[in-house]
Amino acid sequence: MTAKLIDHFGRRIEYVRLSVTDRCNLRCFYCLPKGYKTFEEPGNWLTFDEIERVIRAFAELGVNRVRLTGGEPLLRKGLPRLAGTLSALPGIEDLSLSTNATLLERHAADLRRAGISRINVSLDSLKPERFARITGGRLEPVLAGLMAAKDAGLAPIKINMLALKGVNDDEFEAMVRFCLEHGFTLRLIETMPMGNTGRGASRRYLNLQEVKRKLAKTFELIPGVMPGGGPARYVQVKGTDLRIGFIAPISQHFCETCNRVRLTVDGTLYLCLGQEHSVPLRPRLREGISDAGLKAALTEALALKPERHEFREKPYQVIRLMSMTGG
Image 1: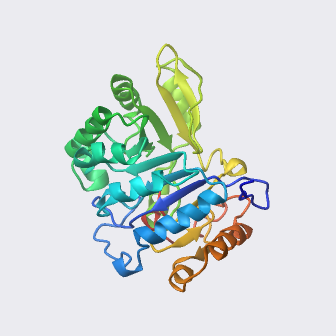
Image 2: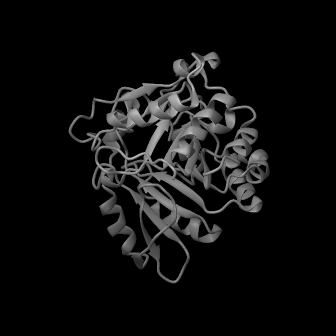
């Protein structure tokens, strides 16, 4: 019988969000400060072989979902090769990718062949000038990447839109129509106080319950469901296949159903996005830890997983940037 990872609060851990780089080619104001260059040195990155060892150990403990994240994961050379290795591991049933899509046009077909089944794309605006102000980048390659992903057969394609008061709060209806046109899923996300940039963005916080009420005036929303291991709560636009997910860590925290942990590019295992509890795995891997020892370390790490985050109560608690942890 396969061992299971179950924390002290009875939650089964079956989902790993794996950051393959902390680097990004965009500078979204809520994530990375402009001019930021304090990235992890490549010598400290987990190698593909080390990543495979850790994910294999997780899979043997009952994890069946892995999401490749960053930073921007497509900046990591050879990512389709890693995806192929991970998708072939016994027990891994779902391999997905979070990306800003700027490099997706050239990689979409290779990723699909390698075993990536679905993707999440960060897209906060459909207006080129506004997109540039938010990200420092160009909208055109993102849209081209989305169309390439669609053509490659990646599905579902989920659009992640951060709800920002006074920045993009006039575009929610337009984004719904964009997703309706292209068969994408839309997920709206509340801002989180991650590092100084995230705390600054929290001044733009929008309660997603208000956003849902606003959308309901234009679209007939009915209860909806969506397969996947994430925290979104879905509604569906009646008469269509469009599902809209709401990820609301502040107004409706989802900690009681948290099924995930995060592994950073340098091999640090974080047990909660909103806490600093962590276990460094890279030193143990490079000291020659056995497979049994590695699985024991993963099991023991769950003792550090808290019952819930404290974004509202302690907004200054998390000092690391989102790009350091992985999406």
